[in-house]
Length: 355
Image (cartoon, rainbow, N blue to C red; front, side):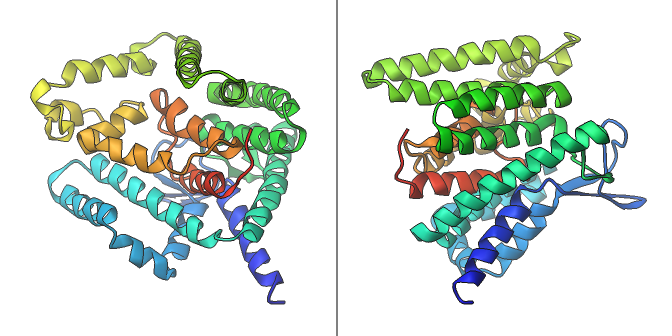
């Protein structure tokens, strides 16, 4: 019994983190089935966020972590921002704190090899159960619904589809090698057809390319150069197809150029103090959003995250979320993806398997 309970708890955590249940709070009450194209008012949060808050609040390591220099500074900045800065800034600071605490929680929880194996096996099974249920629901109900008509996946057309395809690709690679990328490409195409998520289509391609470039025996400089060129090529494909109606407001390039235009050189250290910069709610670019809030100190955050990325499939998935999607989305700091990214980073650091 003593050996069974920890495994049960680990599997339960994986289920709660991966399952795409959401709660929408609005004037009329609470919904499970908010379709953003129909109901635009209200605040929607994944159930996993509330589960993680409970886990963090009742874990002693959370309070120890809060007294680390990095989190002390971030916490102070968060409370100051609530008084002096736009609420969007406070939200991003909170999301970064939440991400770091989630990483520290899983880093402590998956501290031995046995738990790492349990989470790998359970995440594999649960990921493909979620994929199966999502596809069957799309076939028999409507794309976006999950199990029944009363449950709608709020981020179905955005981060959910991209994340579940990424996880499916990685887990299949771990079992059938390079054929896992073929499976991932097929899965990405299927999810693209039912969700129109271009990230779902392109994620497996990026991970396959990233692994291939580091698998072949080339010098570091050549590998880095090829990786950069490949990333920008994929970005070009994504950006050229991201705005079907060609309207500037839906074009990520438009927001990048708008940020550059609005950024005065004397605010380059801390763009958050520029009213021109903060008047735009979101630039739809994670690098810009993080830089906007933390200034040049945003480098510290990315260095911290890079410390967890090792040469294995979980590291490749983490790179896809943190760096590849950053120019076209805000995936790293999304409430649904934060705990999943935290698990991937910890698995990357704990896992000794290489490409």
